[in-house]
Length: 309
Image (tube, rainbow, N blue to C red; front, side, top):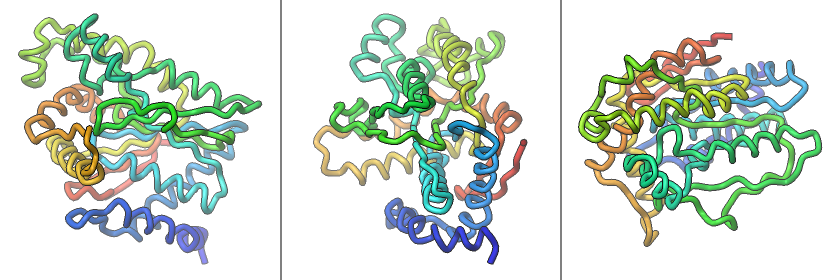
């Protein structure tokens, strides 16, 4: 029996249990066994080679457009790395570090009204992430707490709902739509790419705000990541389509919540415009700089994987 077959036998029950929890009546995963044996298990062996070459915690980044499957891939990698390789894995979503609704309201009044909407660089609490990563690196580990952001209420949950990290991790996975994103030159930034930019950001205040944060604090954060795995989506129209599916799923999960803020079709079309510029630039940049590129097809399946290092 090969190492991949051995790994599959050990992790399959947990992975398939996770698949089942994530599926709905209309949305089901296809080729699950193939995804695990041909793509994710070999990727975990690659991750372990990277980890073995270091004498410290390995920091991985998982990047991709909205609805591309980052959270799903992250969870499956966590299962395989912990179950078969016996590693302590800490998964962090950059979404959990969005500024609170109150903070974004304050930012929108001080800087520009569009900044009330979460998403672009500058709407995350980057100093919070830095402090967390710094603590996870310490030789003398200190128990710490990680915030939790609830998209259905567009706000951070109270501290008693935060995740407690009790042991120093061997591997930290930071996943998020803008991980590894690079700033643009002014000439490219100047031309609006959608109606939101054309009519609501005529003076480029909002675009410049995000771009300046990519140049400074986000660049510094991304430099702490050892390897980036990029989920490459064929085109931006699929981002919109998959984000709609994501919202429907969120609606099903929170159907009994009184305070949920589920977006309508028109609201989602507007919402993805906030992400469009940086996502399109990432389509160009990340396939060149990411360590691993997962190419998705129109059916949301990983059709091929290539390694840049």
